[in-house]
Structure formats: C-alpha cells, structure tokens
Amino acid sequence: MAQDTRNSLWSHTAAPDISATALQGDVQADVVIVGGGFTGCAAALALAQRGVKAHVLEARSIGWGASGTTGGQVIPGLKYDPDEVDAMFGPELGPRMVSAVGGVGDEVFGLIEQHGIDCDAQRKGWVQPAVSARTLEIGRRRCEQWQRRGADVAVVDRARMAQIIGSEIYRGGWEDRRAGHIQPLSYVRGLAGAAQRAGAVINVGSQAVAIKRDGAKWRVTTAGGSVLAGQVLLATNGYTDGLWPGLRRTVVPVISYQAATAPLPEALGRDILPERHAASDARRLLWYYRRDRNGRLVMGGRAPFRENLGAADEGHVRLAVDTLFPQLRDTPFEFHWFGRVAMTQDHIPHLHRLDEGVWTALGYNGRGVGMATLLGRFLADLATGTRPADIPFPVTAMRPIFGYPFTRIAARALIRYYRFRDQLEAD
Ligand SMILES: Cc1cc2nc3c(=O)[nH]c(=O)nc-3n(C[C@H](O)[C@H](O)[C@H](O)COP(=O)(O)OP(=O)(O)OC[C@H]3O[C@@H](n4cnc5c(N)ncnc54)[C@H](O)[C@@H]3O)c2cc1C
Image (cartoon, rainbow, N blue to C red; front, side):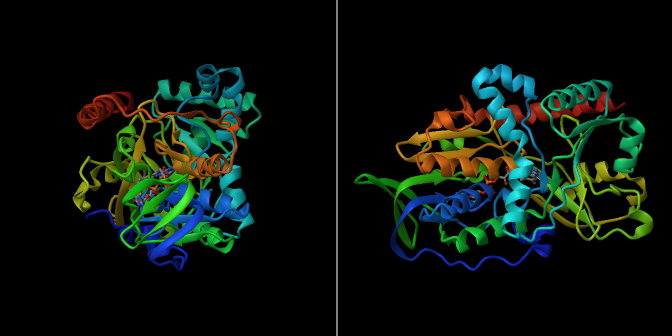
C-alpha cells in the first residue's frame, strides 16, 4: 500500500472534507502558506482571524500528510523534561518555552471549542506507562517537574495503571490530565473550514513548484497559476520536497504504522482503556494506542523504512495488541495505514527564518498534534511582524543535517539497537 489516507480509519469516520479546488491563474495575498496539515491550517486560521489575507496551497488534499494519519493524541511537552528545557535555553526563554509547550492541550481543545470543530474531541488524559524500573523513575521525575510548575499531572501506581490500560504488563507511570485525543482528519478539516469562513483561500491539488523573489515580494508557482505575497510560510514537515533548497535535509522522515480493529464488543472491550485515556508507553520504540468513538482499538508503532507497506508489516502492532490485550488475539484489524513522522537531530521542533519574509516550522518528533497547532500560530505571529525574540520558542537559521544521506542507515541501526534494549528491559 502506498500512502493513501483513504485507507485509514480516519478517512472512513471523518467529518466531510472542505470545498476547495486547484489554483487557476495568478493571484495576490498577504501571506502564502505551502502545506495543508495542522501547521498550515492553524497558521491560516490565525492569520484570517486577524484580517490578514492568507492563501494555502496544498499539493494533495487537506490532511493528506501526517495530520490526517496521526494517532490523534494531544500530548503536552517535548522530548526533554521541563528542567532540561530550562537548562538548555536559559532562564529567560526556557520557562516561556515550557509554559508554551505545556499549554498545547488548551491550544487544541480551545480552537475546537471556539470554532465548533466536530472531531470526537475527548480530553480524558494521557498516560505514559513504564515497562521497566528505569522508565518508571524517568516518568516519576518528569511528573514531579510538571507538578512543580502547577500542571494537572499525577504519578500512577501499578494497580491504577492496570485499571487505566486494562493490562497488567506495566509497573506504573504517570498521567497528564491536560491531554486527550481527537479524530485528526476531522480536526484538520475543521481548522481549514474555520480558516475559510474567516476569509482564507485554500487550494488543494496545487503543489508549489517554485518560490522566487518578485520585486519586494515572493511568487509561489503551481502548475495552474501563482500567488504573489509579502510573506511565505512553509508547512510541509515530513513531506518537504525540493521546493526550498536544503530544507528537506533538516528532518529525517521515519514511518509510523497504525492499525484499528472493528468496534469491540462489550465482552471483549470493557476493560480496555475504560476511561478513554490515550496512551504512549515509555519504550524506546513506543507503542501508542487509544479507542475511537465507536470503541475500536487503534494501535500504532514503528514500521520499516519502506513506503510500500502491506498488511504483512503489521507485526509490531500485532505484537503490541497480543501482549497488552491477549483477549484480542483472534480479533483482526480492519484498517491499516501509515505516515511519515519528521524527526530532528536535536529532538526539538524547528522554527526557522529561511529568508526575509520566509518562515517554516517542522520536525515535531511525533508530538505534532499539539506542537504543529502551536507553531502554526507562531508562524502567523512572525508573518505579521512579531519579533522572533518575542516568540516563546527559538527561531533559528536552517541547518541541514551533516551527512544526511547516511541518516537512514544510522536510524535503521539505532532502531535495531532500541528494539534490543527494549526487549532486555521488558524481560
Ligand atoms: C502515523 C503517525 C502517527 C502520529 N501520531 C501522533 C500522535 O498521536 N500525536 C501527535 O502529537 N503527533 C503524532 N504524529 C505527528 C503529527 O501527525 C505531525 O507532527 C503533524 O501532523 C505535522 O503536521 P504538519 O501540518 O506540519 O505536516 P503534514 O500534516 O505532514 O502536512 C504537510 C503537507 O504539506 C504538503 N506538501 C508538501 N510539499 C508540498 C508542496 N511543494 N506544495 C504544496 N503542498 C505540499 C503535503 O501534501 C502535506 O499535506 C504522528 C505522525 C504519524 C505519521
């Protein structure tokens, strides 16, 4: 199967798509946005709400990239713990960053409420269950650091985690009650629809093939026409092509694979995530899972590096389901799909100034539901004159990864090593 969001559970259960056509002719805007995922649509919505003329160019359809294929878990925070972020970015920027990334739950669920987005939003919390003494301790420290900052989080003991998950395999962990889950394709379509209603123009089937200076502005060209604008936002993440030289080499796209069962009958599903938490466990190659609105179990995990996956590649997620919920051993999956997760070398999402009036945000390292929504708004701020120093996130220059052609080989080796270490710890 090549990537096709129509194979996913989300495309079968999503709210209707927006009405949009391909770009025809030469037009003008204040800001042109390339990419129609969470980043691009959140930016377009924020701009349109301020009366700024925003124009989105999406190569395929809204949410076709990672946004329409994600697990839909809204998880605050970065890979680094709050104390580490403070230490890395200093006493001025560090705490502002921690506060911003800790607030992504409010950002996402606030937009959903404000715009009446119909996307099965459930803010029932997220847990990070631990498989080993080491990860239990990491989770305890992480939770304590958020608690010190007033976040609604709690350490979860072994018995309570067994109740939350419906499985005995974990040693405990921690719970973040700021978090939850959404139907991601409905959410991104909802953002796009709200942006259109606020005045943004959205063209689909419109791949940007060139960005060139045109006087004091930029002209972004597609096969059918062009958009002339003072500001350009690139929101192409793991699907970045050669449009902006070097940008593709700033992230490593890795494949994440998901599968969903049919709605589980009461007898089988009663004990599985009964309070509807989202969960991503603390393995190096994590298992992430949740229920959908119809009671299906949706399970995700790392997949091979190929982009032509088939049902035979479900091994990693099948193992996860069978280990966690042995009662589902004979329950087949109804849907299989995958997408590209954009990883950065420093494990932090990147917000770059590429040139005068050209900005990008990408590389969410698997935390893009919240972070892409947040950084989309920050892109809108930058395009409307907010100084980079006033954004509570580092705005940096683009730096392609050194030795990029070898990153896939290195990543493959790392994944094998992680799998080995995970097995050792779980035994
Ligand atoms: C399988 C999977 C599971 C995930 N699970 C989670 C999760 O549970 N929680 C979480 O927080 N994050 C998760 N993530 C990460 C999250 O989905 C992404 O970080 C987020 O969707 C990124 O949004 P985006 O808008 O930046 O990029 P995308 O949604 O990838 O959008 C980029 C868009 O740009 C378009 N494009 C590219 N080039 C051009 C061009 N030249 N012209 C026009 N358009 C172009 C593409 O067609 C694409 O639609 C997951 C990702 C995957 C793949």
